[in-house]
Length: 409
Image (cartoon, rainbow, N blue to C red):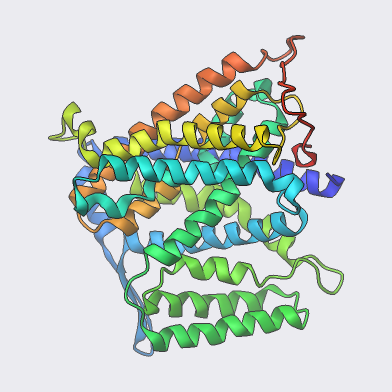
């Protein structure tokens, strides 16, 4: 991998790891507040109506939806930038680089969804949540890996990042296809005009940030009003940002500027607003409700079976190879860590269900499943990797003629 691309990847992993630790703290704080005397105030604040209008045209939503539809659009914009960079110049730029994470990510989305559907097959009112356990929270996952220090080889972190990026692409497609409300054509048409404007800015080599910001804001508002989920506007806009133009690199500049805001503000605020669930009146038996059980089993077992199983088949069939100095027990640990769904799982849960009761069950499933997956993943990676400073070497399987994957660094 070229030095510049490697530096970008290392910088990304460093920020995501630190952001993941802050995300854990935010989630824990939300749980503490929701189960304290401040719980009712916490709920009331999130339900506060916030209105922004210009000339009679604007948005009137509860604070929670401003966070989920507005702030998260910034997060999805960053995802779009990362996806475009990785596909054009990074780890997903060729089949040789992307084959293993593509197979692993597909398995990590399909199997959890099937497990959820199987457990909820007798409860049709719950089926709409099938995509909840298919998601991976890259910040949370990399934050956990950061806690393990140099037990975890860089190649494994890079592989997890690639899987999570493909997982994000899948989540974006799922949201667009399955979680879009009734479409209003006039706002959507105006939004398409703004999108065309962004494309023209790209074509004419515009490198200034302001035109893209203004047109993206218009696109976001129009998409929000159209019934299509507003966060998709962030992805669409990001794909129009040029990699290089006029001797500058606008995409890298925007990504570098936005990443700290997303990692240290947007995602922690989302966690603080969405992770709070009151355990008052709940019992251990609630974990066996089909919704949380399906989510937890999907995250814990589904990710393990899907990622490890599909990766193993791909390697044995000769379609992919393991990164250098990475063994199958480490891949199993990675698969468990990928079962930390958190941010994206909660986000999809908010799209899938309207009732507070169902969302409470979603939170229980996501929190319990992510916690178990994290603990199992940590245990597996500790077993698979040498202690820091140890001279022990990680034994790498050589079956199937495995060769180092260039993107592993």
